[in-house]
Amino acid sequence: MPTMDAKQALKTTISKTSTLTDEQFDYFFSHFKPLSYKKGQAIISAGDLVDREYFVVSGCIKSFFINEDLKMFILQFAMPGWWSSDYNALYNHTKATINLDCITDAEVLCLTSDDREKLCSELHPVERFFRWRTNNGYVATQKRLMSFMNNNVKYRYEELLNLYPELYNMVPKNLIAAYLGVSRETLSRLRD
Amino acid sequence: MPTMDAKQALKTTISKTSTLTDEQFDYFFSHFKPLSYKKGQAIISAGDLVDREYFVVSGCIKSFFINEDLKMFILQFAMPGWWSSDYNALYNHTKATINLDCITDAEVLCLTSDDREKLCSELHPVERFFRWRTNNGYVATQKRLMSFMNNNVKYRYEELLNLYPELYNMVPKNLIAAYLGVSRETLSRLRD
DNA sequence: CCTCAAAAGTGATCTAGGTCACCCGACCTC
DNA sequence: GAGGTCGGGTGACCTAGATCACTTTTGAGG
Image 1 (cartoon, each protein chain N blue to C red):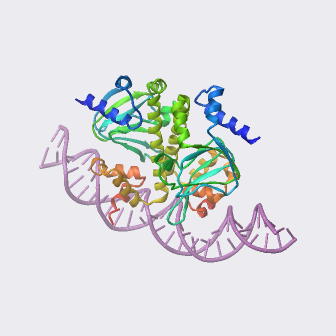
Image 2 (spheres, rainbow over the protein chains, first blue to last red; image 1 turned 60 degrees about the horizontal axis):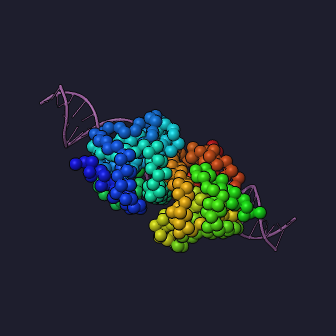
Image 3 (cartoon, chains in turn purple, blue, green, red; image 1 turned 120 degrees about the horizontal axis):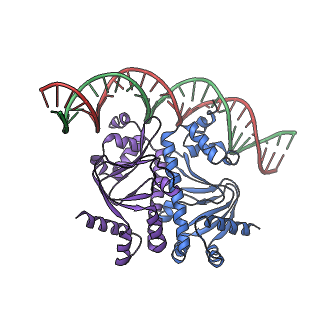
C-alpha cells in the first residue's frame, strides 16, 4: 500500500526535530499530494514555473543543470527521505534553471510552496522542521564545495561512494561523473 | 554610538521577513552581545568548541579552512548584515574545523546557539527569520558550487567582483584567490 | 626618511583532467 | 538476426591552472 508507506516515511522524517500530535500530523500530511513517476520522466524542466517541492518516498531523483555546451552538472541524487526542487526558483519565484528527473521509477509527495508557508505559519513545529532541514542542506553543500576545492577526483569519488554506497549500483557512471564535475572518461580511468 | 547602530542593523535585517513588536525586538536584541575585534584577530580557530554565531555590524570577516598542505580556502567574506560561524560545528556540537578572523577591524553581535534555540521556540517570527536566512545561504552556496563546476577562474573572478564590488579594495588578492580556489599566481595572471 | 614585511607580478616548467576518436558489449525492438 | 542506442573503456593528444623560484611594489611603524 504505497500511500501508507509514504505517510510513515514523512512522519519518520519530521519526528527527527519536531513532535506533532496525530491530528496535527494528519493535517500536515493532508497537504501533500502523492505522485508516481517512471524512470526517465521529468518532474521539473528548465524554464518551468516552480511552485512545489518533492519529498522522495521511493526511487532516486536527480537534480541537475545543463550549460550552454550541453554539459550536465548534477546537484543532488535525492534518495528516499530526501527533499528536492529548484529551491532558487521556488523561493525567488523565478523560472527553473535546474531540472529534476527520475533515475528510477519513483514515488514522491508533492507540497506547494504556498502550502508550506501556510503550514509553517500555522504550526510552529513545522517551521522548526523546515529550518532544520535547510540547515542540514546548507552544511552539506558547504562541505561539498570545500571538498571540491580541496580534493582531486579520485578522493571525491571514494568520498561519495563512502557516503552513499547504494549509488554505485543504482546510478550509471556517467551520472556519477556529472555529480563529481569531471568527464566520464576521467572517471573511468580512476582505477589506476 | 556603535551599539545603537548595531541594534538598528539587526532590526533592519530581521524585518526583511518577520515583524516583531518593539518589546519583542528589545527582548530578542537583549540576547546579543556586542563585541569589537581588531584587524587580524581570530574569532574562531579550528579545534575550538563553537557555541555561538556572529552578526557583522561593521568590517569584514573571513571564514576559511586550512588543509594538510597549509593551503587556505575561504568559505565566505562576511560583510555588514551577514552572519558567520562554523555552522557545521555549531549544529552538530563538534569542534571547529573552520576559522573566522577579521580582515578589517570589526564590530559584531554575538548570539549563543542556546539563546538562538530559545528565541526560536519563544518567538515564532524569529524561527521564521532563521529559516529564511538559512534558505538564502543554501541557495547561494549551491550557486557558487555550480559556478565552480561550470566556469573558469576568470569568469568566477568577474562574477565575484560583480556581486561584491567592495571586495576589490577591501580584501587583498591572495584572499580573493583563496576564495576562488586558485593560486595567487594564477589570479595575478588573469588580466591577459 | 628608512626598514622590513606583506602583497603582487612573472618566467619556466609540470600535471590533472579535458577532449576527440574509436572500440566493445548488453540490451532493446522490429 | 540486423540494426540502434546506451553505458562504459581506452589511446593520443591538449590546456588551464599549479608549483617553484625570483623580483618588484606597497605601505605601516619606528
